[in-house]
Length: 174
Ligand SMILES: [Zn+2]
Image (cartoon, rainbow, N blue to C red; front, top):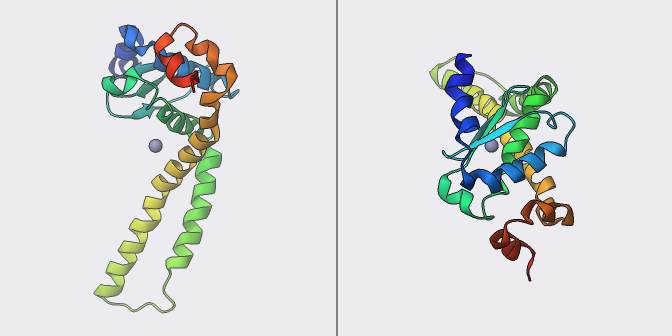
């Protein structure tokens, strides 16, 4: 209950008119994958990000000024990648760990001394390998975002903006 109160109650209950466009885009995104179709979502106005904790409701973040137009809406596609990662975390982590092993092997020196310099080099390699855990997730989410981004212009999305004349004009004219 504390988790719901601290993280979810505010975004889920705020019901602002300005969230409508973002919620439509996010709602549509959740329908494109069987793992996310039943995961409820809310939106909040902080720096870009997401709290993915399926099957709990998911909170997407976008600054209030960015929510006012279509320019930043595709960033939700990247954030949706984090939700997909969370839905498949064991398999994804296993793939990333395979990558980390390969990177560690590439960084392994041909010969290792037993001195302070070698220890510092080893710590540096460990940091690089650990950093790739985060980078691999971000690259995966970028790939998800790029794969889905063209759908922004797909005719099936037009109904989402049917009642948003401002957005419809900027998206579908020209
Ligand atoms: Zn990200």
